[in-house]
Image 1 (cartoon, one colour):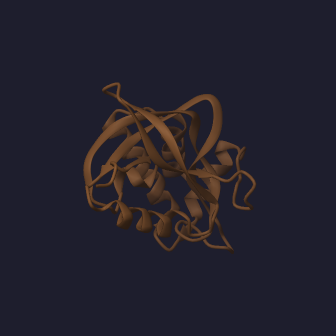
Image 2: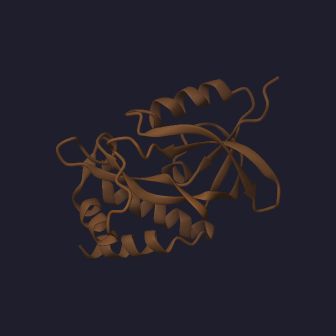
Image 3: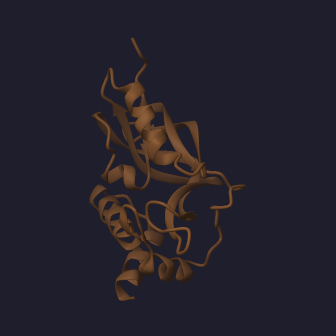
Length: 176
């Protein structure tokens, strides 16, 4: 028997996990923040015109609220394989096992994908107005960058998860 596999979603995994979910809970990951700090050259941009995607950027003392998914029992290996194909497409993300606290107070260990700050696709520190301009124009294999932003922002709002930067970006990109 396999131990339960939990996955932490903070961006598109929230609204498009693409794996069988047994349960989901709002969860908090400490010392990391959700940020448009990774150039997207596959899914939401191209090499010639990169977009931006969310990543977990190390932020001691900070936190990221997202969703912890428990994978359907028996689907652990297939889920990890699919997640690695999706998330590790360019090696800009690192797969890590990180603890989160569920809203009900339980602590669980999750698989999470964090940005490799030494990777060429890392772009932490971009001004938020510049992020908006990039997101408004970029598109990649999974569609326009703005659709990724809008879907993530709306799903966070539906879950009652406040992210002021994403809310501002969504409004700004709509205006552009």
